[in-house]
Length: 196
Length: 238
Image 1 (spheres, each protein chain N blue to C red):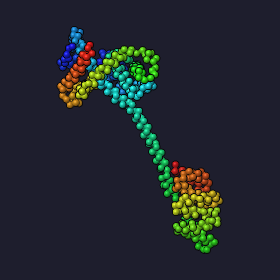
Image 2: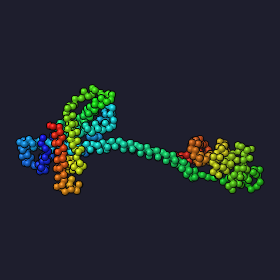
Image 3: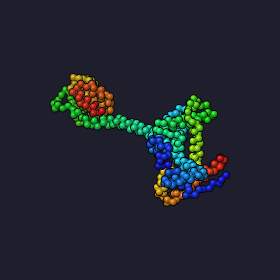
Image 4: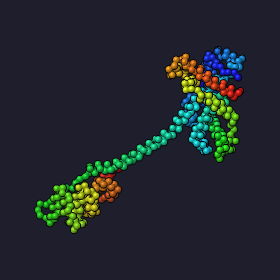
């Protein structure tokens, strides 16, 4: 979402982090560039492939982003963000290896996993929520995604979106409303299934 | 279980304005009061927030993927640059190596001379055969000249004049390889007046045959009055 006000916690005082929370591409690229190598290195050294490294890193980025947005974690500067990101990635990878171990004879540095003072519960809670939400989103059609992305992810004004897609303003508003209701419905239905 | 009902668009937009902090101050305060007394509204706001988060997370995931391409592509670009650079270097070296012979050609063409031969005395001479052949030489009948000189050479293998001109006769027919032994013989005779010229023609032979190694050696070792010229020729090749 654009235009984060100071009121919203997550204002870290650091531009890159703020822009990260605001989904700004520059910040994403910067963080990716700065942090990917070390995670990749860790994964590769611990029986992982390039593909594994990519997945783990992107998952970690998303979790990190989500936690920042939901104020589950306050970060003051990029160093602590990097450390946090790395921690998440490590934890995720070791976790994955552990589940793999049932099938192979992979040697996990067990001490690593135990010594992590990461709140594993917090991590899995965020991850579960994230996976769930991603699942909902993936079921949306392209037309919906198009409008919703531009409004909610990129923070464009309705007028901008309307002119870009050659719709009139009213139509865009309606599409946005209907698509969000679709999401809402999918959510309600899955909640029903879970039997909350 | 309650069946799902869409909330009206107006309500939806109102909640959205609140979440996105686009609500005017006064309206926001009233809205917040309403939230306190309406649990359903509070829940709905929470859910809508999550749905917005779903959109953001979904698109973020896609962006991360394309950023990954971009970031890791850098590496392959550098690799490509390295490959491109080495190809350029390879081509340059190759060009230079191929170019050297062309340079040699041009240098040869620029420096090639033909010895005009010796003046033939009008009156009778003891060396009739020699000068008879010389007449052939001067008329360009090099093979005839050689055939006449060869028997003389057989009897006087060390004769500098004979060796020089037989060499020259070959040289003028562009039979450079064959001229070499004759010139070499004379070049080795430091007292001979033909020594310097023989060295020079040897240099031209080597240049033409692209035997840069021997040319270089000759340039280093030459002590005749043609030494400077030969050195210069060798240097021009670089």
